[in-house]
Image (cartoon, rainbow, N blue to C red; front, side):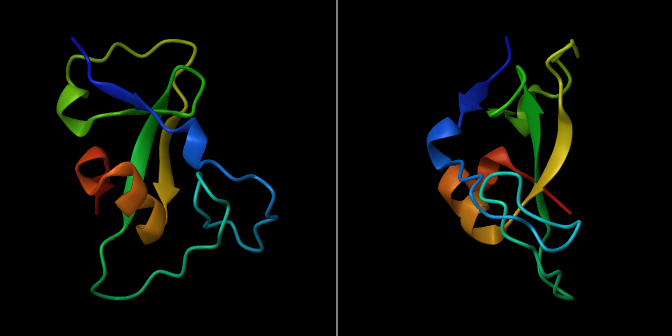
Length: 87
């Protein structure tokens, strides 16, 4: 069984990102800082549903698999950092 979480209530697509590195939830640009963690989520079911990292092995990719996308630290906190992959 896979563990997933719908995060549609957190999305805000009104911003227009200025760079290629932006949060997939709020569209804010992400400034990578040395020594700070980088967060990403695995979006499934056509998004905005996040797959828990512990469920990666059990998940079978299908047409709704959107892959891994970056999230900013504020959205990672709102989603729950345990739901994020940390680089």
